[in-house]
Image (cartoon, rainbow, N blue to C red; front, side):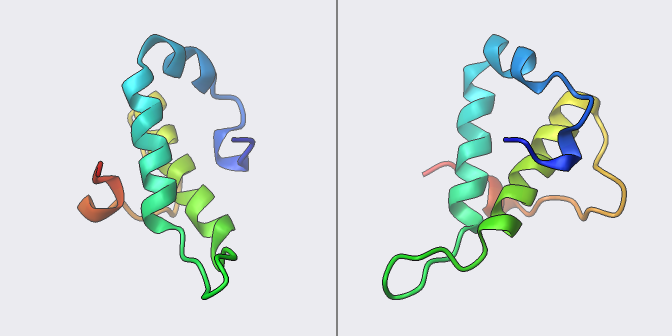
Length: 78
């Protein structure tokens, strides 16, 4: 994750201490990602942004400016 939303946040240190949070981050990316009939991603950047939004909120306690809160379905572990 090198998303601009995470600039200046030491998220790797946070994730190293709590690997289940990394699982949630990956789940958000996978839940949001849409694929075409050939398995090619249609919204990879958006899926990355939503995962970065969650990670930003986890590390700072706040959503990035202008970003809507995550929906429960986005965070669901399967």
